[in-house]
Length: 298
Image (cartoon, rainbow, N blue to C red):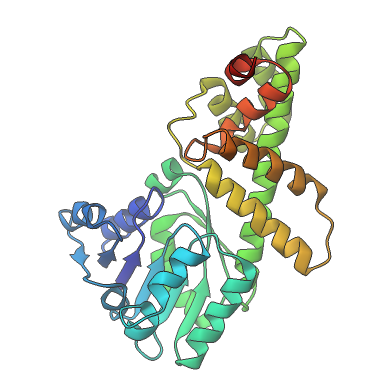
């Protein structure tokens, strides 16, 4: 299939590369062209603008947030201008539910199709083609896109026809993920202060709960390689804010999300914006009077 791909960051780059490896013809565009050039050497076509990437009829976006996506959708060089009638925009990023609904309206006004297909998985999972995709849109369009989805991961979960439903699932799922990281960080701090070696505690947790996510994140916390981000703290903070916006819109109390937002915001204030989200551990250590940040404060 011919497909455009816009946004070649930690997630977008391996996703576009896996489409290439699956035999699809891929046009790529990135705000910083160096990333796109790496894929061109692997056989991709370099698009001069987002509009050019969209002209092939199917275009994926994998960008940081609503603003970054809006910047490539609108304008004379944007997706709306380049995508032909009947063409498909697939938003794979984590976007707000309200903005996802806006995108659906914008494309409908131009007789274009829009599908939301955000993904679950860290960059290492994307590299292995193991992403889980949550999709919403017209059934026939989703069926047509299946070969492209298959290049990204083995599991496709269709949650409805209204595209914003997929982004609602993604936002809620990311809230659950950040809540798990918060709970793991608090537990590690408590175990340490109680005199328990964290590695031994992690062994028990992983045996009792038997979750690949718990095991993966507990290992990341033990390694403490916070300066090698796969999921940046500022992006985790953005996602918690999206959950709170959805909670506000649906009159749903979400007190745990408020707490995580405060801790993540404190991490950003302490200069850890570009660290991995697991750096939340440092914030909670400081609250408990231990760790390198507590030492600096003292």
